[in-house]
Image (cartoon, rainbow over all chains, first blue to last red; front, top):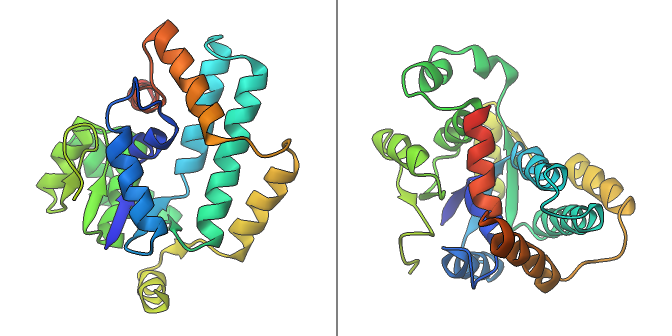
Length: 158
Length: 66
């Protein structure tokens, strides 16, 4: 199957099973991806989004500078591995798309952030079997646009 | 797979290329040795125990704040 991955779901890969909801379901999906059953698509934006979040933890002193470096190292290593093995395809939309009415409507009419919008708009073009996200607001819009969502925090992956 | 990627390119999408892999390889060179996933999960678990925050929730919060 073709799966679209939002950053909020991707971050589950780094979650501690003991504390973070949805980690077991997400790891099940990734095991199947590595077994060749699915291909994951996401926006290039995933990388800066996760990197920025790791940085915010360091700035708030939730983690040390050393831990920040470890998290960044693992992020880059995983994405490189997934890309090289064909588990992940990163997708970029044309810059002109940001000026299109259908892109801007998601921000102005649905109240989505530009980051949410970028993922949803990219997914509409990828046409995934499932849009995987842990963001409930995003799920409402994804479903209203005719895509099928999967929330690893609330559903069981088959 | 190849056909799927060609279809996406026809829609005007830029799909990950050799250049993307080379960029990540360059980034990796700047970091230290490989880090185990268990070490990463120990760090995120520690943050949750102290701050009740997960990386996933933090991504959503940062997006909402813009």
